[in-house]
Length: 265
Image 1 (cartoon, rainbow, N blue to C red):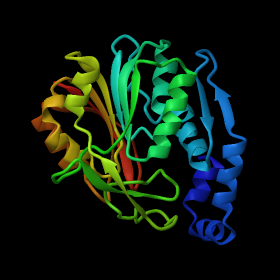
Image 2 (cartoon, rainbow, N blue to C red):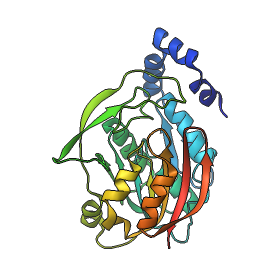
Image 3 (tube, rainbow, N blue to C red):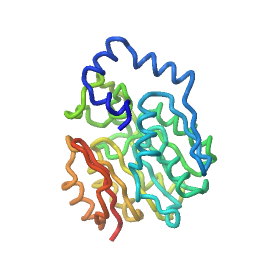
C-alpha cells in the first residue's frame, strides 16, 4: 500500500484537505508540472496530472490489478468502459508490445477523455477511439444525468457514497450522451470480435450486461470491477452466465469492491 492509498482511507485527512483546499492546490501544481513516466522495456508513456492518477498508475501498472487478463497472443481488440485517464491502454500496449491495438475507450467525464486522448497520441495508438459518454443508462433520450466526484475516481450514474470510505466532497451533476456499444463498435471496426472487455463503471455494470446483449456475443473475455454497495458479484454473475460467460478467477477483492475475470464458454 502506498502512502496516498493509506491516506485515502483516513477521514481526518480528507477533512484537512477540504479545509486547507490542498486538493485544488496540488491539482493545479500537477497540471502545471505533471509527472511524466515511461515504462521500461516498452517505452510506453503516461502522465499524472492529479493525485488520483498517481494512485491509479501504481495499482494498474505496478500493482497488477489486471494481472492475468492480458494474453499477447489473443488480444488485438478491446473496449475499456470507465477508462478514466487511459491507463489500461498503456498496460495493454506495454504487456503486448504492439501499437496496432484497436478499440474503444469510453468515460462520462470529459476531462478524463482529454487525458485519454493525450495518452493515445503519445503512444501512437491511433486505432483506439476515445469517446465521451455513458453506457448502462436506463430511460429514453440521447442524454442522461451523470455525477462527478471531486476526486474523479468515484464518478457514477448513481450519487451514492461508498460507505467504506470517507466522503471526499459533494457530487456534481452533469449531462452526458448515451452510447450504444454494439452500434459504435460496428461503426468503427465492423464485425470483428472484441477480444477483451474491461468494465469499471461504478455500479452500472449489471445494467450494461443486461442491455448490451448483442455486443456481448462478440466478446471473448471480460474483466470487471464490481462495487459492493451498488451491485453484488453473485447478481452480476447470474446475468453473465445467462450471456454464456463463466468465471475464470477473482483477481482481487476488498471490503468495497473487487475485480473478476470471465470468459465465453
